[in-house]
Amino acid sequence: MNKIDPVEDLAEIRKMMEGSSKFISLSGLSGVFAGLIALVGAGAAWMVIQDFNKRFMHYTFSNSLQEEYETLNNTLFLIAIGILVGALSFGLLFTYLKARRNNQKLITPVAFRLVRSLMTPLGFGGLFVIGLYYVGAYDLIAPATLIFYGMSLMNASKYVQVELKYLALCEMALGVIAVFALSVDFELRSHIQIALWATGFGVIHIIYGLIMWNKYDRK
Image (cartoon, rainbow, N blue to C red; front, side):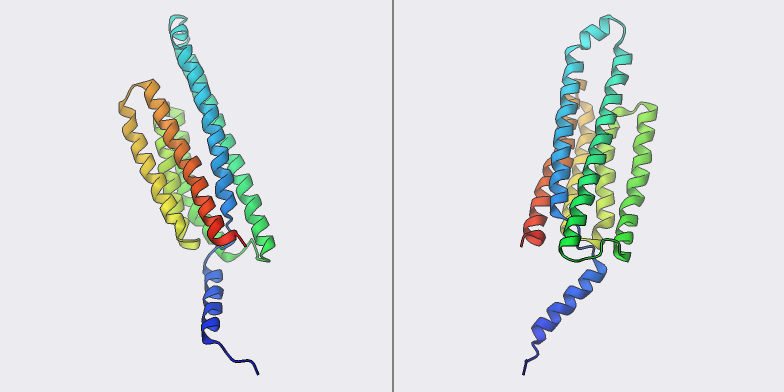
């Protein structure tokens, strides 16, 4: 006759309750690949800025500085869009694979609440960044993306593992630091902002993803 183990029963009940209130299909590998894509994009942005700085005097004497500056920012904007699309694509892929591997449903009420909590501040943040781009306030785009992204993660953290809150705090802190970096000259400022952006969307994402994979995904 099988004995009832109250400890196992409590653990199973806790697991069931957590599954109904948390989106546990989020994959740590999503964070790793999002970070890698961000680092590649930051490297591309750094090379574009380096090329602009080398040709700065030429653009100045040829009276094409303003035109080339706008071209630079258009290129950086396209790189940012590419990073976003790539990160979201890999995020969805690895989350889908984890859900299928664990026989979990990907589309659940919790998933909808997670998306809503994430996209509300992220959507307004995206509109704010587009507004900055439209009015030519390019220097504020990097800080704004970090801060609004961190706010979005914080708002959505109640539906995933608690570690997401620490990622959110790091993103917002880097965004604040990036604002203060605006006080230095253009060449140094651009390097500092790229470094902070790469740290927030690249390095910290990779560290977070590896921690989550090691803690929740690795069998």
